[in-house]
Length: 369
Ligand SMILES: Cc1cc2nc3c(=O)[nH]c(=O)nc-3n(C[C@H](O)[C@H](O)[C@H](O)COP(=O)(O)OP(=O)(O)OC[C@H]3O[C@@H](n4cnc5c(N)ncnc54)[C@H](O)[C@@H]3O)c2cc1C
Image (cartoon, rainbow, N blue to C red):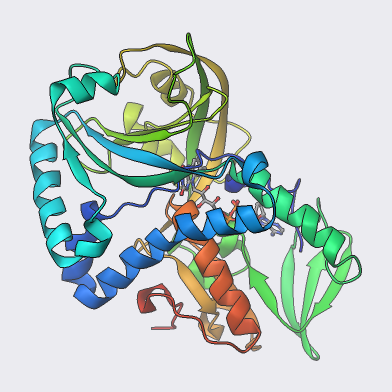
């Protein structure tokens, strides 16, 4: 496993840790585009991640360290017309997918909103089963175990970027500044940076820089760790902020993407050494809650926005790699929703490389067409 920088230094080590998929908000659109069956598959694929990550964290004895946990997730609406639209979309979702929709409910009783400490400007919420995790600790914990379990078979080479890949006898020559590796198969798991080595994905998987803040509330929230929030403040689902509460009391707050015209400079930006200062300032002053918190940390991270909104998974066609060999694989392009896509996509690639078939929604496949 080659890593250009430190272990887990990409988006996984920098994100907000929400394991809460977008569901009813885009189900109707997915159904229109791909049909009810595929839309249902996508929903179930996303939803499978919470149980899967909880199981893995438990099996690897990483539950405590990774803080992988179930939460009550609230989609919070401040805009009346978007909220009305959300309720309609939720109705369609629950009608079409009664099992998946069974744990979703509308919360608009003022006393309950107050108990959730939401500001008076909030018009209502949709509550569902969600989850949260400290993904850096989960991933580094798993890597640590793999290194111990397979000391001679698994190597993690940090500060070793792959600079190019060439067809070679028996497979590929993978070039790095530290030397060349021969491989029968290559997996591209570089998400936002994937099109560097897969030129056919340029313009299809696009790096987008985002900001994450850590905030410490003046007083620890009594329910810390058990709730998570996505806050829609405008008239579009594209304009949102999100918050998870760590059991320790810290709040992880991200979003603000369309604030201060940030999209104009952050789309196509693959440099995570910095971040958009005004978005960071906005995230430190949002007023969704009745309680205040002070910013204790800020950083940038790079997401991979996919042109069709779906990940790219499976064997890479030659038209995408520009190479003759048929041993390249990809799992990338999670459009800012990696915690509810990456595990399943990676697992599918792993299974298929081993000759086993694994189902992912067919619109995730990286076909030449
Ligand atoms: C600020 C922020 C907040 C987010 N919040 C959430 C959230 O709350 N919930 C959610 O579901 N998703 C969230 N996401 C998205 C999520 O983090 C990503 O979808 C997910 O982490 C992608 O995982 P990955 O392993 O594919 O990519 P990454 O974690 O980005 O890893 C890719 C790695 O590839 C390495 N690399 C790149 N090029 C090369 C090369 N040539 N050679 C070797 N190594 C290379 C990079 O250094 C990096 O470490 C967020 C993203 C950001 C940036």
